[in-house]
Image 1 (cartoon, rainbow, N blue to C red):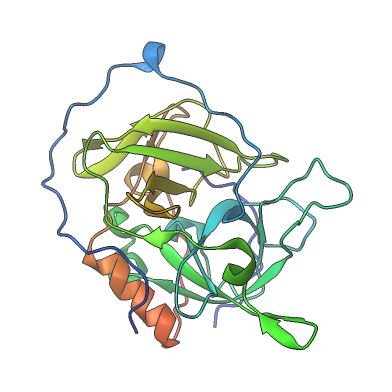
Image 2: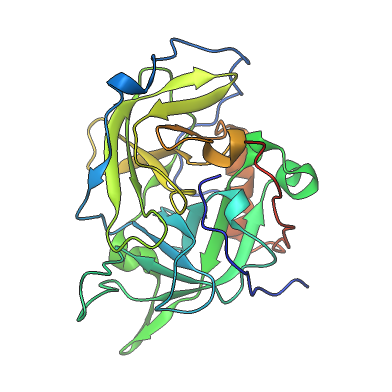
Length: 273
């Protein structure tokens, strides 16, 4: 589990820009790199506008998980891990490019209020770890004469499918209590059908952080996973997992884009570590 454990005060109670869907990979390990001795370590990053922190109990405060802005026609959607979400998530706050080292501008792109949460049916019903992702919808803000959405200011990453083994990804994450994010660029592999990467330094708070890869011929980034999935992201700081992004993640995305009825999510429970 790579989320910060905290008391959660949350109410219980159309297609856009994506890359093509795929079927889930076979459940088998694939070219798993060897142990920690050869594993790189994540380094402090200046951050990117699309990646930020979730605050469940007000800002400033202690952030719980990482989330990122995904490109959509509505310009108001975030991606995080399913196990990061409890209840409706309504009232939670997202701070893109959060910088706790800056007394003047800790929230350079503003503070955005979550209104709705969407998860896959298999996550909602049984917390199936191959569906450990969530899409959050945030409210717009008045800027002068117009309403602005978060993507208007930060840009958005393009929701995509799970990476093939050997795909180079960069994960940008905020560990719990950290003032700045860490990042690491490494190849992926498969463990029992779960995409994985080896890089030390991803601990509580990094859950939900995006696995970003280049899109040929574009300056945009594809998001191919989030820290989550097996053991809710991993039992150790040096190996991280994701659910395998298949057609189901796009089904959740389309529900969010169309403004369908949101979900109320039960807490994830044990990570099995």
